[in-house]
Length: 410
Image (cartoon, rainbow, N blue to C red):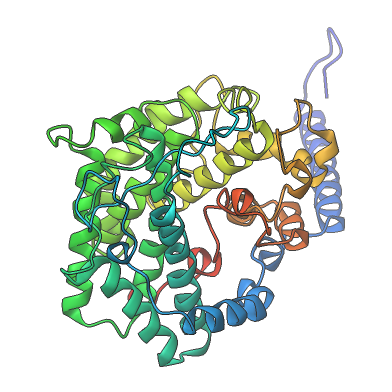
């Protein structure tokens, strides 16, 4: 309340004005409280869907499928053109949509790629089923896959991708299924200590292949790491998954782990800066033949990275650069276009555009840290497991239960 010019303040007038201001403040606060009470409070269940209930039938069906199929390690799938040993992963690049097939050339060798992708479906499905039901047969079958691929000297895969896609760095992308395999291992509590140690050693060796510049092979990994597209995100997610598996359990230990700390620093200082525009787009995905699919693919991988790197002591979800780019901007920008594909403001993909968006687990993972129930609500409406392999391969997470539930060892 302003004083009139020339007026004289007395004790009585001062007390009167103070009482009036106090009453006005009380009325204002009461109005704010009533308005807040009239708004529905954000419910924790609205941002944390019951993934176990939603995916129970799907997980059960997938586990039954993989229980009936024995593991097929690389050594059973030989290619005479491979320069490596039978234990080395080998693949040949498939032609792009604008490249006409050559009748004289043999079809590209993709058996290793397909087998590794199947492994990335099988082990997480069996681990998720074991987490839900406690059925030992699911854990035992997952352990059989893991021993064949990573432990048994006669069949284990060499922890490197030196011969992927004819030694092109894009072949690093073919190892993406290893991420969810690593995520599944802590849920398999029936694994022996020896098996667990051997698995950690394999993923630790692969992490060093990805990150050690002194190694002869990682030139391929470095090319992928230094790209500005989803290939770099794939490198980052694989490195995070390997480091996370090898790190001591517990938020405090993981916050101090040197490998995870280095990856947090790179994510904040490099990944966000070169990949996300201030508006939240991924400029280097928009120039590809599949701008919509690759953008959503990149979004899912970035969300998985945030999930792995965040602790109670440091939230990567909330980090953003001064000029704006961050995970919050990326998910907010893409949300309307996941809701309605027809609103996509850029050109349509070269193929399979109508099969998208499929179920994007970035929505599920982002709903909780950003308290956005609409993200979780949209996630529940989208269909998982698209039928076309080219689309299915751009879903980095196939068992979200393993990403929202803590493993027993933790």
